[in-house]
Structure formats: C-alpha cells, structure tokens
Image 1 (cartoon, rainbow, N blue to C red):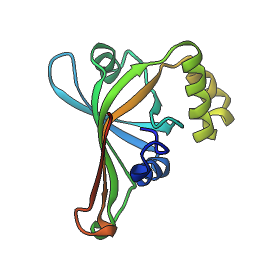
Image 2: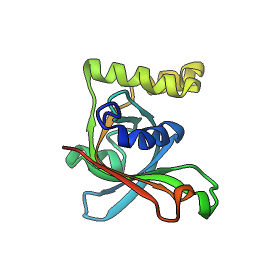
Image 3: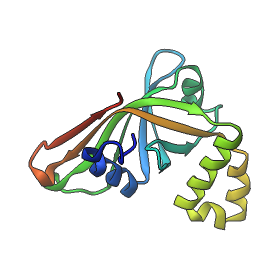
Length: 154
C-alpha cells in the first residue's frame, strides 16, 4: 500500500503509524490456527517490518506459507471511539540489502533497540520479515459505529 497512490487510505497509513504491535494469525505446520503479537515498523511503501526467529512456531509457518491475517489497534479504547486495522497479506523473510534497510527502519521506530547494547547485539543477527498487505480495513467508530474504509491491492 502506497498512500500517495491511494489517498483514500491515508487514514489507514496514519493508524498503522500510530500503533506499534500487530497480531498475526497464521496456520501452523499441523494445520492449526495460531496467533502471535510482534512489534512492527511501517515502511514508506506501506509494508510492515518485524523481527522474529524462523525457529518459532510462527516463523516456521511463515517460512512454509507466508499468508497471514492481522490486526493492529491502540490499547484501552472505549467502544465508541475504537479504531484499528484489519488486514491480510504475505510475510517474507528479508535478506541482504532489504534486511539492512528493514533493520534501520525498525531501530528508527524503536530506538530502545539501538540504545541497549545487549538487545542491539541480539537483534542484529535476528530474522527480519516484511509483511506486505494485500487487503486492509480501517475500523473507526469515532466516525460512526462500524465505520469502515477498505483497500485492496490491484
């Protein structure tokens, strides 16, 4: 999603910029639905980057089949003003220059990673993923109960 190419989705991009955690839903190697939460950083082209090891249950699932559903929202909202994003897309493991760029984006979003020597060292060798949305829905009850805006990749 590139908001410049789709001005109607600027609110979705703003919401994703405001939140920090995405809840990923995926299917594990045994066919069971699973979910996990990861910190993410949005990129200029509308994808989300996150850190997670390939050896985790979700890392193995993403390596085998990168399709995910996800949500992101602020904590502790009142029902009348709930805002959040629902989405679907594909997560891919990053390598080389793409991984380096993603790590820079991630540490700019979360400066505590770069500030803590032990954490920085641990994450320097960690796997970085790109989540590229193919469908997004913004829920914004502040604009009316059940208000939705949707975007689909072309």
